[in-house]
Every structure is written in C-alpha cells, then in structure tokens.
Image (tube, rainbow, N blue to C red; front, side):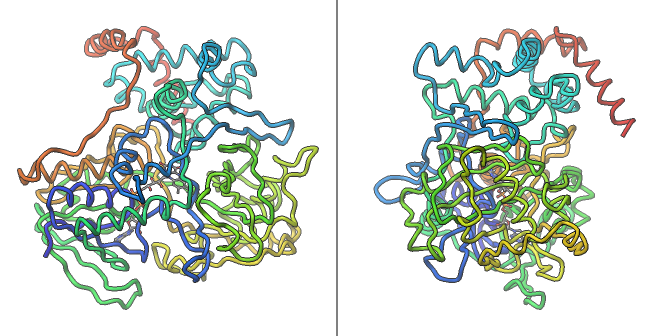
Length: 582
Ligand SMILES: Cc1cc2nc3c(=O)[nH]c(=O)nc-3n(C[C@H](O)[C@H](O)[C@H](O)COP(=O)(O)OP(=O)(O)OC[C@H]3O[C@@H](n4cnc5c(N)ncnc54)[C@H](O)[C@@H]3O)c2cc1C
C-alpha cells in the first residue's frame, strides 16, 4: 500500500514522482526495465560498471523547453544542479551528397546585423524569392490565428499541405523538413500544420531570444548527466523504486482503479501480485497503455479508449565508436539526401567530463551518435528499408549514408576509424528476444566491427530477415489532437503522465512527458486537496505583438468566418481530396 503508485519510470513517471514526493506523498515507482529513464536513459554497452553508454538517440533541448529545464534546476549535482550539465551548441551542419555542406548558426545573434540575418529564414538566400515570401506569409498566418482555429482547423491540415510543399521548389521542401528534423517525432508530410507550425515558430523564436540559448545538449551520457542524479535525489525524498516490475493490467470497478497487477521480474513465468494505492499514475508508453487499461474502464471513459488511435513510428539511434574523434560541427548534423532521414552529433566535444578512452573497448577516441527517423524508404547499400534489414545491415547502411554525405574532397569518415557500434537494443531480429520492453535487459549485443559483413546487395536480399522495434515513438499526425487524453482523465484515482498526454508542447518529447507528469501531479493535488501549491505549467510564448490579431481572429472564428488570409477552408478541402485519393 502506497499513497501513489507510479507505473512506468520514464521522464513522465519520474516527474510526477518528483512533484508529489516534494509535497509529502509516499510514492513508489514500478518500472518494467532494470533501469529508469525510459527512452531517455543511457544503456551500458558492456557488462563492466564503467562501460561507455549508448543511447536510444542523442538528446536535444531547444530554447522553448521550460518544464524539463526547471526540473533539472531542482536536482542537485555536485556543487550545482543537473541543469549545469546543459551546454549550448553553436552550429548545425546540413550535409549533402551533391555539394558542400551548409552550416547554420545556432548561436543567439549578438549584433544588429546578426539579428537581421536571423529574421530571415535561415535558408532564405538559397530559395526563390517567391518561396521565401510565401513562407513568411504562412508563418504570419499561424501567428495571427486564434487558438481555437489552430486546434480545430489547422490540426486537420498537414504541414506539408499548409506550406504547399508539392508546388514549391525542391529546396523549399527540403529546408522546411530539416528545420524540424532534429525533433524526431515530427514528420512534415503527416504531422499537422498546428503542431509542426507551432514548434517551428518556437524554434525560430528560440534563435532570436537573447536571454536563452537556442539549443543545448548534455555534457555526458543522459543517465550520468541527469537520470542517475535524479534517482539519487528522489531517494532523498523517500521515493521507492521497483525495477523489473512491469504492470500487467489495472483492475477496476468501472469507476475507479482498485489495484494494479504487477509481475516480479521480467520473465514470462514471473510471479504476479496485486499492488494497491490511493492514486495510480499511468506513465507507460502510448503503445503499452491500451494493454493495461481494463476494457470496461476504457468503454466508460472515451478519452482512455481513444489512446489506441494514436500512431507511432520508428526512430532509433546508433552510436559509432571511432578510433579518432571526428568533430564535424559543434552541434547537430542533418543529412539532407539520406533516405533514412539521418541526424547526428559528435559527442566527445560535449562530453567534457567523460573519459572515453578508459571506458571503452579498444582505442575509442570519438563517438558519433546517429538517429534514423525513416525506416520505410530503401537505403543506398542494400536497396531495402531499415525495417527489412538485419541489425548488421542497419549499421552498415547508416555508416554508408554518413560517408556519402561527409566524405567530400577530404575523407572525414574512413572505414578503418570504425572500432565498434551500438544499435538501440529495442531493435531486435525475430528469433532474438520477443519480450518487451527491451527485454534483453539492455545487455545488447555490441560487436567488434567487421566490415566484411557488408555483403553485396543481391546476397543480402536473400536473407529477408528484418527487425522489430520494441520501443516505437508517438508521432504527431493530422487530426490526432482529439485523440490525446488529458493527464486528468475522468477516473477518480487515475492520472496519465507520458509524452502522448495533451500538453502545451504537444509533441512526443522529454518536455511533453515532463509537462504531463506535472499535470498528473496537479490533478492529484486538486483531488486530495492537500500538498500545497501546484507544479508550475508554462504555455508556449509567442510575441505579444500578434495578440491583437489573434483577438480579432477569435472573434471571426466564433462568427464562423475564415481567417483573413482566407486559405484555411480551401486547405481543408485539399486535405479531404487528398484523403479520398489515398
Ligand atoms: C531516438 C529518439 C530520440 C529522441 N530525442 C529526443 C530529444 O532530443 N529531445 C526530446 O525532448 N525528446 C526526444 N525523444 C523523445 C523522448 O525521449 C520521449 O518522448 C520521452 O523520453 C518519453 O518519456 P515518457 O516518460 O513519456 O515515456 P518512456 O520514456 O517510454 O517511459 C515509459 C517507461 O515505462 C516503462 N514501461 C513500459 N511498459 C511498462 C509496464 N508494463 N509496466 C511498467 N513500466 C513499463 C518503460 O520501460 C519506460 O521506462 C527522442 C526519442 C527517440 C526514440
């Protein structure tokens, strides 16, 4: 018996636990895995305690993140806090296979000229003037549309259509896709104009705000820089941790949750037992939630029922351990022509507190961390999409796509530099582990690199093995807002705290998961009437200068009138026609 049972120990669950424990609640976290942190945790690449860590994918903190940074500022670490481990990036490299890469500055401008430069979209000099004008017009449309119009109209239009991508120059299409590619859960073709447009604006404002760094990354693997100190801090607040304890299902009487059946250990034959609590915070991923919510409860609470309509996609990371440190830019790299939508970061320049050599196999001097966000488009080496490749093929294919982008006149990535690689252990081959989540206990294979495994495409095509992803990520899709539940669902003692919950940030991210955890905690405080002040929630800030226009549009919207730019209705028509064609 505990006051609050938090089911799932990712960013959402840990945040809810943090807020509640600070306010005097007894909190126990039940986590399926043997490590906490969920998708954000680091994963040791070998059994030794000091082994280097791999990650699902590198972590990126744009300027508009408020919640997650506030939490980090409240976690002690050494003489400061975990937030001190955030370091600013300086530049993004947009690498191309057809020409020299382009470097986009991510530093906040510090001169009038710099400000003027930034006010133009970063790529204006590469686009036809009519495209730049059109983009600015679209952004103004967004900035002057009232919230209701954004939610009810723009959520039903894809970003792709909103920016009329099909009829614009290829450069325009490419550049606008790249602008949000670092946030892996955003896909320009399927994401809504509301969400992608809002996030795009936030990224743009972030670049212009002199008071905040445009984007930051951690100075060590995520667990070392953030999650481990967080767990230690939660221990001081007397939070109890139950790793390897997956919740199997909730029990309910149709109105309230009456218990949670958990397994002791992750094996199939694990013992089951029922735990009980006054409050249950469900903080498992979106694809797991419908499996543990009792059907009877879902039938009576439509918000719970609609969770299963939310969509996921594959985004996963691989780390290449290199015999030399290849710095690239001090920031991200976006690979413009990579069929697998690759982004990367060269870690060592940021991991100043990590002694890479002494912690890694062989003579590793550099770590290139890469995320593949498209698992459906055929690659360049085997002509297969990533999901049809073996793990070895995935690694070889990604390496090849990187080389084709980075190796111009000077060969930056050479095969002999590659010492080892570590692919997200959630990517499993059939016949590997079928348990979920990450059932091989994070002791994922990491293998000595053998480039001979890059066999000819014809030979590999015969294998037809393919992989499964046991940890997909929620993606934003057109019209999905209505399926996103609030943290405070209409069940007396159940709240939700995960990245699919409806939040201001509204995109699968650590920021949303953190905001959701706060909202869950606030709902519990409200219900119980104890615990003091609420956890702070921030809205997304947009420049005040647009407020009068939004007010005017609010009025027009209530009267059923279109936005002054008079395009929304035709866009909705276009969306419908497109849907019919598909
Ligand atoms: C490759 C990649 C890169 C990313 N990069 C960024 C980034 O740069 N910036 C950013 O903001 N976001 C990023 N994200 C998104 C971000 O990591 C997630 O949105 C966020 O961490 C989700 O947190 P969560 O708590 O909602 O869910 P999760 O992290 O999924 O946590 C859920 C927890 O529940 C546990 N669990 C599952 N089943 C059960 C069960 N039955 N019982 C108990 N526990 C269970 C899981 O093991 C997990 O620990 C990235 C995601 C990916 C995949």
